[in-house]
Length: 322
Image 1 (cartoon, rainbow, N blue to C red):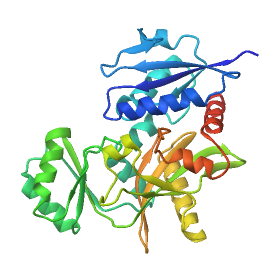
Image 2: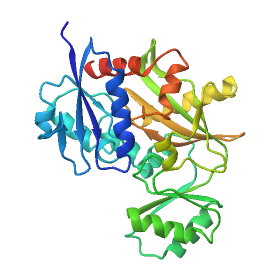
Image 3: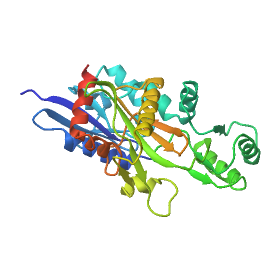
Image 4: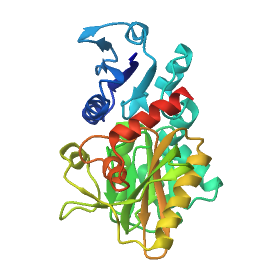
């Protein structure tokens, strides 16, 4: 039987390089060899593409590839750059296009689009190095808009990279300064206390145009208030599926995940992160390239409905072809 040639892109120059390698490895091991010829296309930290361990031009790496699976978390893999390039090649790829990838990766743009669509998110404000004010002045603006504590983070990073929690107004100027110095832009949100939850949308899955997997609740390591980059690398936090949430609470999560998927014009699949308080649900961010590495939330969500990474990838390949 003629096998479909799948190009699996992994690596890249982002802070999520190691996680990308692991997601790519999960893809390579999950695709059945009798149906697919999976090709490991490695992109190093300098942006050089490799095929079978040999540096090659990107066009050469993609020769004869029928479908691309993107495992490049962060950076050019999620900000629309890779998607724009793949669009020029005409090679089908699974996942969102350039516009939706860029919009979902930029947390400021995500706020603007989703709040306009009526999706509840934490109160926020953003600053850049171009703003003609001190960090103390920035902190005063934030304090006048909403109360502490605050989450200060770069708007174009994933896997908790660069996040600082400022417990009070006193801590806020230094936190803003640290993020601005490193990333050039700082997004400040009100810290919402509650359960951290993930949900995933898969298009045209099991007879549902926008199928939402059962939500997963995240349980942090003891003594931590948030997921840190090391927790992703070391798979040191749990995803609890099924959750203790009521039927109505799960429906609210599903509805908000679908609404965000539509509003951002996502394609094929997405993963959304939330904070659930006793009174409200807040959306934190939407991911165009869900992780499949050990400790990621999507595999246990798939398993909870009798599915698997293998079935998910097979379906994603079908969506890319359609």
